Length: 214
Image (cartoon, rainbow, N blue to C red):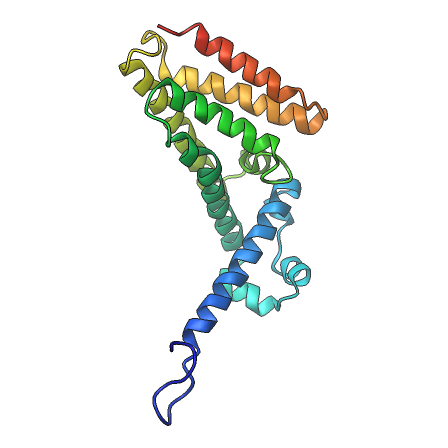
């Protein structure tokens, strides 16, 4: 069997086992790093800190990422994957149109409300840290933001084409508004300890969409 013995006289075949252990270690590192970044920012990440907290060698962490910036970029990619699994994929289980749009809105609020990341929305937290700092990290964060707003706008456009939303509204404008309602709830819940902010946001989103119902 792979990972046990090789050809007679050869070295033990441990490659598969090392790959599995390496993948597990990488996942642990990224999971902890996402939590830290959502609370303290991407600049709070360091190879030494993660090695100490996870009881692994610094060289082991370095082997996975190579530099602090590469670690930060890997953490952003991992957070995108989490966001997709918690928000986008469930919404896309709904048929195109208004129901999918409502599922995207509510999925985002639930993702923040349930603290998938302890600091609320990961991208809201780290975006504020890098929004005025040119570089690769900012570029990747900006691209993730554009992708989200474009997805929102396309979902709105689909609902319009199906006759479920007033087609006079600009999809990019409505996407901006719905996103603003959600991020305002995330901010108020975190800074003001206002758990009612999510219900306020849901009410605002329902009212805005009701006004556009055809």
